[in-house]
Each structure stands twice: as C-alpha cells, then as structure tokens.
Length: 200
Image (tube, rainbow, N blue to C red; front, top):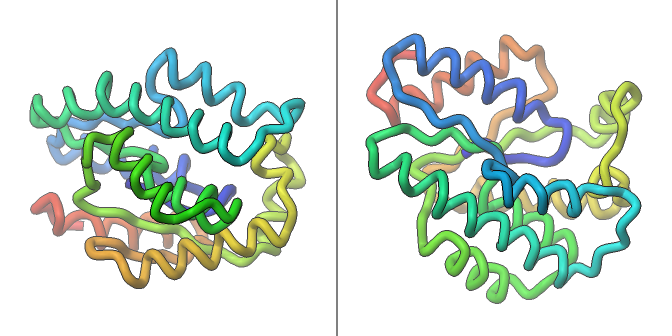
C-alpha cells in the first residue's frame, strides 16, 4: 500500500513501481481508493466533489462502503489468484483522515476498517511525507477536490497522524516525498523489493 497526504506523488510513484515490478515478472493489480470498481468509483465522485458538505460520519461510512466493495470484488480475488496488489491508499488513510483529521473515535474507525476489509492487512505499507509548503506549490496547477480544500490545520493533523502511524506500525516505512520523482522511486524500490524477494 502506498499512503500519505494529498499531493505527495502516490499516483506517480505507484505507476513507476508497477512498471518496475511487471518488468521483473510480477503479476500486478494496480488499483486505488476510494475507487477500484465501478461502484467504488461512483462513491469517489461523491466524496471528492467540492459542492458537497459532508458530515464526518457520512464521510467515513462512504469510504468504508467503497472499501468493502473494492476489497471483496477486486483485492481478495486477486490475492487468491497469486497476484500482487499495489494500492494507492487503504485503511491507514481512514485512520489518518477521519480518525486523527476529523477527530472521530479511533476505536470506531478501527472497527469499521476491519468490517470493510474482513480483517485484511497489507503486507507492506509505504507512507510518503512532505512539508505543507509543497502541498500549496504543487496545487497551483491542479483543480482542488473537496479534501484538498480542507484547512491547513486539518492537513497538519493528517500529516502528524501519518508520521506517528508510520513510526509505530510494523511493516511500514516513511519516505520523504520532497525530492525528485527519481530519488523517491529509487528509495521506494529499495523498501519494497525485499518484501517481494526482488533486487531493487
């Protein structure tokens, strides 16, 4: 799983990593959350639409509904078939954004994550991290979605949460994303390859 705050380069890095893994003979399912299936992508559109004012409880329930569909329709069948799943965001995002960011009860968030995933845990998670100043500069050319329009205070809580979780969770690595894409990708491969029995 590739995790981290908005605009840290998860999509770019996951595409590069998927290409790297496929070139080494790995069967890859490259997917994302919220999304990954038709139903989950429809929920994504609602969640990220800046025209909506979404209550935090409604927000987390929609995320978990999308996750449940994605997990059972896409991820679990792929794993059963021996395919390596490379996913942009998973349960750690919900803990960081809705738990720490929105202030929802962390135990409740954990329970909802377990229900949506049937207890599935990632084998390895990479968290990308960068200062908020880069979020602002990288967003000048982008159209901000609903989450990206949240306050700087909200983004700070989310970033602190990711750093805290990356430090205490097993099989989780923190990578600085305030470098060139090539440098970030190089370290990402170094972190991921051993878990798959590959050379970086």
